[in-house]
Image (tube, rainbow, N blue to C red; front, side):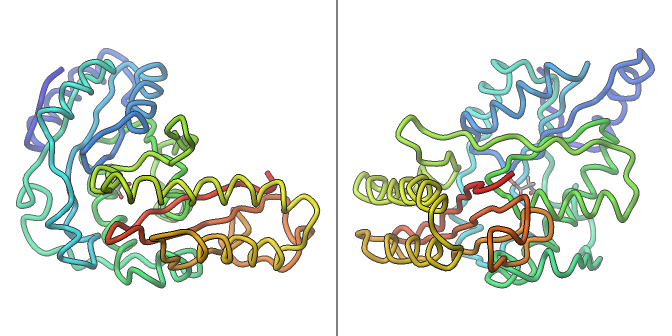
Length: 281
Ligand code: PAF
């Protein structure tokens, strides 16, 4: 696997491989890679002749400076994992490589980006679209892989691709969980042992709510989750919304949609964790 730091070097490599008829898969990441990322990379390796994994902590998507500073940066370990997964290129650019000048572009995909994360993290999705579009322009992938844990991000990227007519396929991949159910996240490394234990209540509550939902209304299910998180030690819920998985708008009745998803964000100590569960699909 080659580690490349500039767009020019990456494009020189990819031009040769594309001329050999190879399809290019891109897995955008911010590093601190775990088994969830590994599953995206392995999928790309199995579906494309070339896999590029970008490792870049994108400053424009952080609305909290503290969160940006604390975001784990582990390029050497990331490269070892990527090598094991069979990736061909780790693309690890500097901030000035990706943003030689401030990016003033505005991406607006309302109402997808105004709810949930969009409401609590102003500017976050604009930053995500800025970097993801730059990566698409630099790599020109045939396919790009994103995890469903960031459910709203995936919906917004699909919409960006649709509106800007990018000629590529977005592949959404299922959430990867620890054996006990906690959704894998780079942020999990910041949890103390006690917080890790507390965090488990998030996925457990979501799993319970799926059974509960089968015999209860949307608002009863909403309340069941809110109450369970409130009662759990060390957790503070930011939001839980049961939405239509395509429009991301709240639903009132299960009959409102054939695709119902519960999206949750919870602070566990200082660490902000997100997760989701599909009630209907
Ligand atoms: O999901 C992430 O890790 C990031 O938001 C992404 C898509 C790599 C853009 O920085």
